[in-house]
Image 1 (cartoon, rainbow, N blue to C red):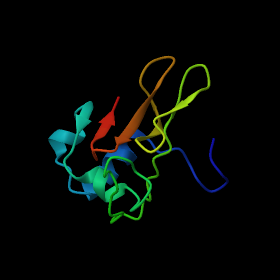
Image 2: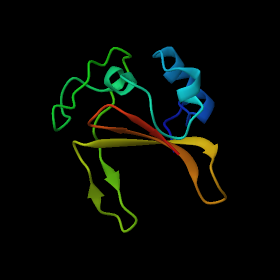
Image 3: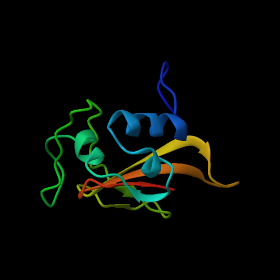
Image 4: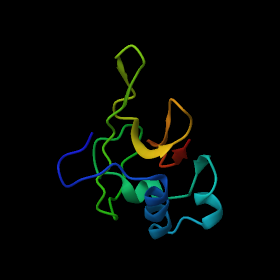
Length: 108
């Protein structure tokens, strides 16, 4: 899943990053769309469509890699980015974080 020396972050680790970027505790504990400008602070300065570039203040360098669909197709390149967490959501799914061109974070 990850290169040697790296690990898949837990939901708590994602929340820690969001808190460091000044997201409120109430927002961090919600599911769905949340935050204000945290996505803007995570995103690269180029590559995002619809005037969606960020300032990468965090050093995270979030690229708009898109999404791979259930049958293997890629969509949303330039518009969205998704990351899994190591925290289960259900028996078959894990909690994930999504970043969109409008800088909002989505957590399920």
